[in-house]
Length: 139
Image 1 (cartoon, rainbow, N blue to C red):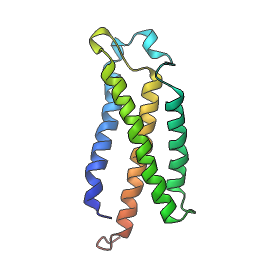
Image 2 (image 1 turned 180 degrees about the vertical axis):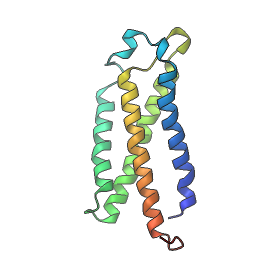
Image 3 (image 1 turned 90 degrees about the vertical axis):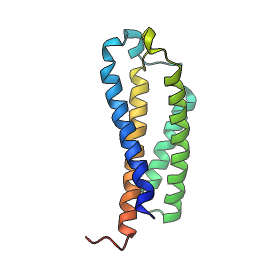
């Protein structure tokens, strides 16, 4: 594995994570009480199913007792599912009119933060594995 391949992915993920944490705090004065509550319209069965699948794949990808090929397949499947959920969240964010006081619910923020934390951990694990395989690095 090439370390340079993952550097930009890790930097992008960390920047996105920082943005997801800063934006809700910066806009918290504009949040209305109804926007803070659980939103059934956005937390659909499909989103729930996606998050459940992510947890299963996340566990498989990090399970050292599984063969390397199964862990690699779980990682690839994880990124496909997470990308789909990220696209859905992006569509949700783009549909909100901030000038009219629209904001993400706490549910939206919690789910997106959780997704980003798992993804950052997955990328960190991949990077650490790449470092272990790189014979040029010394301990």
